Length: 91
Image (tube, rainbow, N blue to C red; front, top):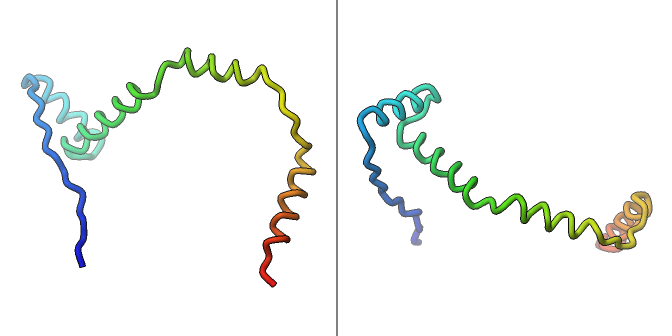
């Protein structure tokens, strides 16, 4: 039996001594290691960077909101869902 483990990569970041002290203080105040603090900050930065342009997102939402599609009321939808569950019940 073979197990596959995720492979970690090392990232070296060169910072000034004063920055390193600040980073260590921030990590300590959060109760995490400096490495974990850096990972969290990098992940947060990536999410903010890759979230896309809010203007484009709003434009897409506004465009979609202009359309009207027929949909039954909530009671009818719930009844149809319930009927579907009953039909799939094994004998």
